[in-house]
Length: 301
Length: 281
Image (cartoon, rainbow over all chains, first blue to last red; front, side, top):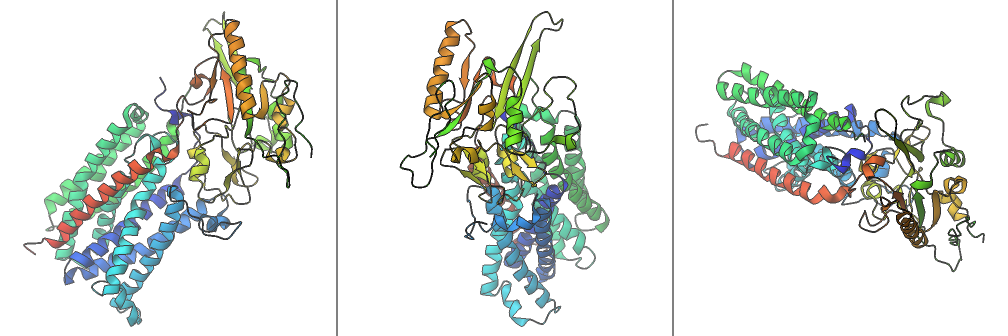
């Protein structure tokens, strides 16, 4: 029997540039949202950690845009995603995740830049005092944070929906990739901030972030199991090497870091560093696995 | 205004759409009767010649090694592909060849067009689907979105390409190169309504003659709103490498977005609780 009609389609050959973008885009959106949450709901002591989130988000989204452009067959035509090349009118298809994502990336990049400048100004690295108003608790800053944060969530999740809105094996055989990418973006972003912050801010902020990461990591295996169940008979593609890799991701990228963080619980920093590194590697391999294993599914009569 | 050249079956008689023409162009397409295909590949050659498609591998011949089908697939430089299905018993005492000249289906609801983020993929006045090479930027979303795996990157332009149903010929009142070259009228070109009537008649004839397996694939509007290139087959679709149940990419859009949004709320709440409720800090 044919497992799915998706097995008759052709691969778009989205490989390492796209996988890396999926990973970095998740980090950009995730770190930004964590920073906004810390700004809005955290305490004064959390501000340096939030600043770190903004420092990561803007360069990450810029690199992400660059990776996407490089992956195009005609990189010099990247602007065709935004402007219709024949009429010079705006190009937007709300029902095409790639079209919507292009605009989200652009606008998120703008907000990430504003917050990046605000963070630099607050740290005294630049002397633009007006930039201080672009961060909560300033009213304008709250607006920037909320709009930018929503765009950040979109950037972290739409890549999974984009894969689902094709006709490729695995990608289009489940509606849960957006959810899985989002959760993975949350855990990898928290891990990256923990890793970057561990020396400078050995603070209650970091403990809160570790607590958040533990909860997200606990959620992740449930989302992955739901993903496998939703694939039904298509999941058979993962029997063998891909399944083994997924198992390694779950064990070394989720469960072991969870146990390490649980046991150290903000006392001993060393296991936390290992845990954060494992979470980051796991998040990258998870995306690579989803993107590449699709090409392994063929139909032979 | 030149009319379409009439094929021996007399079905290619639509008027092309020219400026100032009072005649509205009709939906045009192909009906491919696989039972009369002899696998000569004249359609492949005619397509390559007319559309100036480059040779694979710089012209160095690469044989598939297990079939007379060395083209293997539709892609950016193969817009026609004669599929050879070799059905033989293990001892090769009995068997049959199924031959099918495959091409873009010019779907009424086209998945490629739906996802294209640049607007490069358009629907023409003939109800066909065409990729504009000067607009496409090679993002390859359409390649994964096509339910039939028809599209590929043409290495000359580095853009996504596929059959245009010879849009340039149609605009000048000529029938597409492949159907023009087909020596057995396996590939029939004409207005969709006429093709459907012809196809229904052919199925009836085959059933009368005892070939009860004959049926039409993609002729009615149940499949993606109808395929403007549809087929007469005598075995299950998957035997010919065709999906039994092709769907639109957007089927996952709302579901996928809803699940992602629920996830976002959940993760957001976790963040809120982690950063706000800190009793002991």
